[in-house]
Image (cartoon, rainbow, N blue to C red; front, top):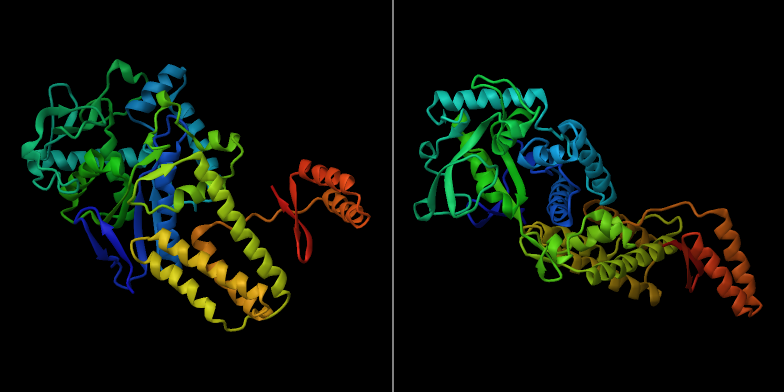
Length: 466
């Protein structure tokens, strides 16, 4: 079965065929954070979907070259750095560092490139592209000294968002980085410096100023991946105007189709409502960690709803993720104990692993894929209970789990058990043998204080990290 994705541009499921003639190299651009604050869980829903996409493509034998940009100069970063009384670079570095810590906590694979908009090579590329657009009459410098893209020179503007521009209210020139769907107008490529920008400015043929948000991504994508991309991702809120503007700028400059497949992630709701600080349902990853949840639990909760469906994030859902992960952990532990040192042997249940990947081929159908994984867990646990699973077959199932986990990244971290916890566990066993239940409970609590849980199994007690 070929891999198929829902292409936002065509609004259809399409078979994935990369630009690479050999069919194995994939160029992927993903819109990263605007580093003026900590990223919130709505942002991370998109980044985790993109991580799943990359991991599945790699599991299917593709080599993915992924770029994720960092927007470190725009209206928001300048506004908030000035409020904080910090230089722009110092201010945004705080949130760049925090972002990289957070993606590590969520087990998101690092991109191959993390270009920042303020890097001189990209500023140079932006100026080069704007100069080309002016020369083509696709851009012009207005009375306010800013440079704008002339929409009339790109008739396909609006086709990604499937907007009928004739029905939208014309609004002249748009200097803000973001604007409403109901307004459409020539958007800023280069913003002339004004006093609100402080010391944020670069020299250009049109005078001092700074780039508009949209040209930043076009310049970074073209510099690092070339004029044609296989996949471009982002949240649905990026479709208009940001991705529309990227298409217009890039295709006017290159004369080539900018992106073959556009994939967009649906909105995240919290407890059935739009996430908002005023509603008290606005969460960063750090907020959830403080509440006692782990990065992999948050990853599970954000990953296991199909990317094109709205995700209703609930704290109760994180508890459900904890339970689901514990079930996976227990299954892996049972197989590991049963396997011992056996070599892999054939087993019919291994076909469930193939179904997991086949289901993901269908536009990353993660819910269906997870269904196959839990079918595998249920059936192999039953075979273990009935003594029908050989150690070699357990080894085969563990190898299948390693393939699946390379896509999901759900495997529990293995931490060294402290000697003190092992000693307390031995004393607890002695207390239980002596039927001293009070001492047994006391020792269990001491083990818990060290960050470990005692799990009593048929094979004896085991220590698991909290």
